Length: 270
Image 1 (cartoon, rainbow, N blue to C red):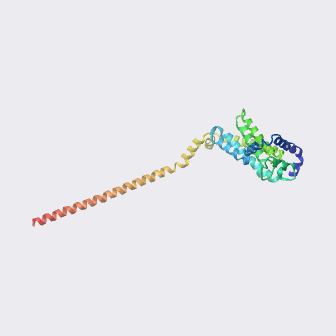
Image 2: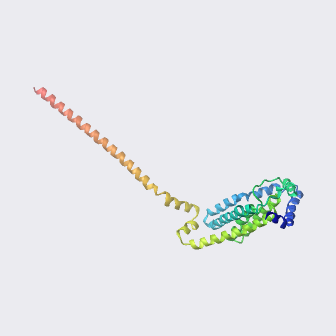
Image 3: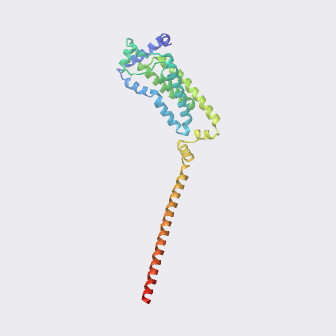
């Protein structure tokens, strides 16, 4: 499969990789640092996942965040866990005798592990932006595709992926984003009006936190109050017992004094 891809897309891959290299040469390496910075946003999809979690925290953007998170997860399952090990396509720079290895070194020799096809960065970025487009306000959500395209191009510029890797990564990302959107749409439809739906979709993060806290953690407080009451009652019992003992001692002392006075009077009478 990897050899077939190299043959079938040889012209397409070479043309775009050469374009990236010519861009590097023409600008004197000006874009090298920028492309390394851009490509970080797709590393393992971590930053995109954090963005989706941030959106989940708020009621107004929760649907977008859930869709993005699901899209990234589905894309990773298809690309990194399924297709990459099956195709096992080496990176462009893997062959040190090829021109691609020279171009890779020229832009800084960014090291990458695992196989090349399809691009995980392209999959994650396109999956997230497809989800953002479908679940968000389409008047502006379409602009997210520029971020995905830029991340994909950074992989070509740095010569760590063939352009065909990026292309198929985009295709997988579009599919993953669409599947995630469909799943979330069904969840919203069938959970609407249920307690779980109210918790997941109709509460902001602060309200949701207070709800969980009051429902599951404040139950321990009555027990704490009871223990405090028991402790105070025990203290009262101890104080009462001490007072009784003191009263008994005082009564005994009074009796002893009275008996002493009586004895003294008897002696004086005699």
